[in-house]
Image (cartoon, rainbow, N blue to C red; front, side, top):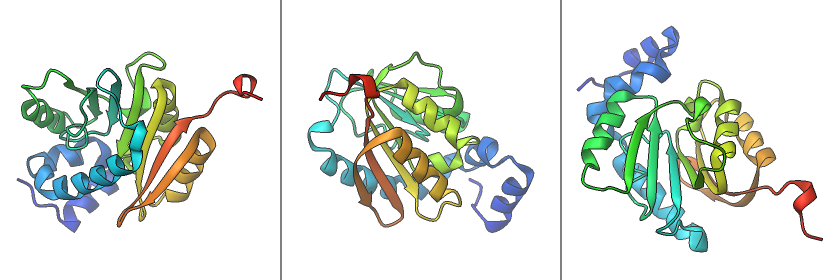
Amino acid sequence: MVAVTDKLIKQYTTTGLMEDKFYDEIAQGYDSLHMAEQLQKMTMIIADMGADIPKKNEKLLDVGCGTGISTSVWNCDCTGIDPSKELIDIAKKKHSKDPKKQFIVGHAEELPFPDKSFDVVICITAVHNFKDIKKGIMEMKRVCRDRLVISVMKKAQKLDEIEKLIIINFKIKKIIMEEKDLIFLCGMRQPASTKRA
């Protein structure tokens, strides 16, 4: 396992490889670094979603799924996507006996799914890592049929930009102030022509 040091982070951020290779390098230690924190966030999200929790017959997409920590808590058909092949390999091994969970390598900016493929789209502490944040958010919007959950690190450099894009593109149902993240529980905005009077 590669120790996550300031030197390693600086190496990847200054060479532009952070998004592509950093998580491959730390993949073997990813769960020990992030599992407790991610599960705590998922517990809060589930508690606050109420009736919006995905039903067994619904489909969920987890964008930036890592090793599948945030994918694992749902009892529906789940697809996880992440640009790190190493993280996806671990997710596939961890969930190999669960036919409702599948994982693919891919980028948020180019989701390989038809429009409105998923009832629920989640993106837990990943949006700030997108190479093109606006394009990634628009892709999540395109493939989502109904509900979204997006968490953003409060310390993210582009927090203001991300927050504005979420507010503009989605109907905000609730914002959860988690210790390190802002968690947006969202719905899809109806086009003006279909709104009821």
